[in-house]
Image (cartoon, rainbow over all chains, first blue to last red; front, side, top):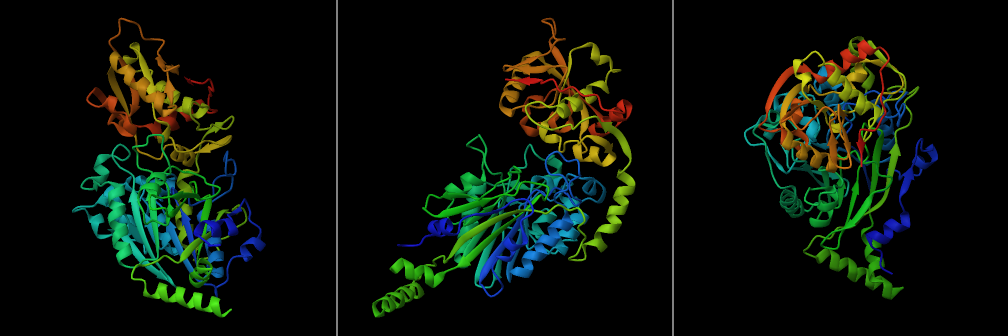
Length: 300
Length: 239
């Protein structure tokens, strides 16, 4: 019997950790001697630096940068190869942003050692100049492949993709953003041109494949799904554009209890995940190499 | 055993010689973990406390001031909710002294522009910044009556926006003060929407006046005046 990604996934299943995951479950996580890659991810944290208040109608006392840091540290103790990613909209939503204009968000995300993030529409809420001022405090990378930053200062700090080597994994990470027209004051993205996200994705995937990336991740702020089939979304991206392994999304604030698997036009599996908003959840995805095990079972 | 050994060797050789890259990983398992409750947690990692404290101190000093009290939770929820109604009513009530109020006036905001619900109990300045973090300004728009159909079409698709002085029932906007003799109504909205934000393109090109008053300031002032927020949970969007 051949083992495909699908059967492997069914075999190992989706481990869903509800509120207050017991420590013994975290202890089951692979130890450092296993060549596994752990991808931690957030989206739409919206300047939620403190936990949500005790009288919050849905998530009382949840989230907050301190709880996030503690959890990330736990995972890093358990895994050698860890990526920490964000799918945009880290700005806007609490007075921290109104008062300090994104500087604190950048400092804290840097201290948590985020690797790569993409931009959401609200990350343009203080315009290009405001963003440039805040990003001075960021020591992580910004990616977006479908905004043409033209002559703006952002062209120097936002790249279409990043490639990060983690153990045996050569990971290509690119970003896609939502059309800012109608979402952001035009003056806040003056000089930035929107490009077709599908075309941009196709082009950047080709580059990443030419550079022998063995895992391609899209950080997307397109949104998970819309009623309007002409509006770009993560689900449509996964179906239409071959070459992506994993889409970590944002924008629609979608809480998913499990990742969605889509078979694309090339017959490949693509996984999509998103973790709601306000830093209430942290996503953790394990990727494993089974090179020779995989091949033995295929031959047999 | 020998047979299997050669199968393995041939398979491995084929892989090694393959010019085309073959992915050799599987997404094996995915965990979604909710962050544990923050009560009692301290910043144990990454020296966050040193960074956070001066910012937190400044923020609490400036934004913890009590503004009003919510008698119950005010929830942001389409198609219509007590918080959506309260926000639209607050905008309308802030303009009662305007002479245009002698003509039909409605308030239309956008649900996406309101960013947080209120829990029951004391409401601080920070709560109002979370509700309306944007520096959106109040704008008056002179809307021809024949453009009301565009608003109806929009509302049918959007699934519910904050409304005052009107309701949306079975696809039609009901404006009690509107008679057949009226050729225009006034719409109170934000500068963001007046400029076509959230696809409200029907506002583009119309006569408008930007009051330069921030919607957030209106909410704060109305809440202070009310003391205990006056709520109306009556649905204003009925399909």
